Image (tube, rainbow, N blue to C red; front, side, top):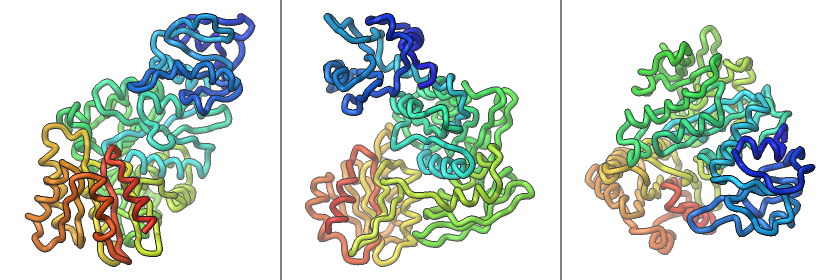
Length: 456
């Protein structure tokens, strides 16, 4: 890894090196926090977690061929190189910041309340039509996940598309310090993490911390249809590029056609350039994601043909509106995470399903003092949608079930107190040829519901 010698690592961490002097000029081959992934030449970073202190795995990591390890305390009688640091978590961030500077690879940083991951996927799919592009995998978008993504970069990579997720003030500043994006993309400002951020104005302040480390000749790409983001003007001389369905946006879409659960079709306008694209995933929100990708693609010099090809070759990610066809059902696996905005969007898409349209929804987390009312809001929306069955699971979802039944007495509403109870009764709630949406916040572990449906 370029310039990631033990000497440089010691310096950037403010650490103390212990071990043979001749090892200090050696570069590590990888950086890992999971001892099971330790390999020859790696640097092990033992994170002290709530349940496990990874320092106990240091001996087996070194036996696996690691070049060195970090440690938060002196290792008595150690016969291998190690670096003592005050905090392993802070050290991994400092190392990632240093390493990314060595590579000088342009970074597209993506944040927002809803759609970060799907937007990241479309942008990466577009940019990969011209550049060797590395993107965030899974949910590696926080203060540990972002550095681990950075460590996957190599000198031959040409662009990095990094997802950046937060739940409190100051977090985005710390993430942006590592990523130092050349282009900042914000999808929208919703009602996530109100527990810490208070209201949507708080969410806006927290998300726009991403601008603090934006390169001076960088770009800002924002959803122009979002009432909060549309108020963002210049930032230190950089004017935002807006995307949306509004013809006043620099990149906008119209002639939008739903192809049901097969996806969306729309016409994209970028100044004098106009082209029609088939988006292979359903939902109006996917049009916004495609427009964001088109805006970023234009910034990085892609042709309309390349942008179109990138959007149309998009592949769904597990847990993110992934269609799973079994002999009995069409399952819409959207159980990675949930908030009121994304719940409503998914319900809207479910309306285009064939057969009975069944929504299996679970509790949404981190909504603050208004959590009960926000669940009721989703329930009211469900009552207005053209769906046949609503199954609500979890303590908070009781509010959703009650509101849905009030909004539409003819809708079949079922309430289960927890996931275990749902799984015990699931078989009697579903029928052959149903289209079934499965969605909840990650802590509800609704991937178990998807697995159960697949086995029926």
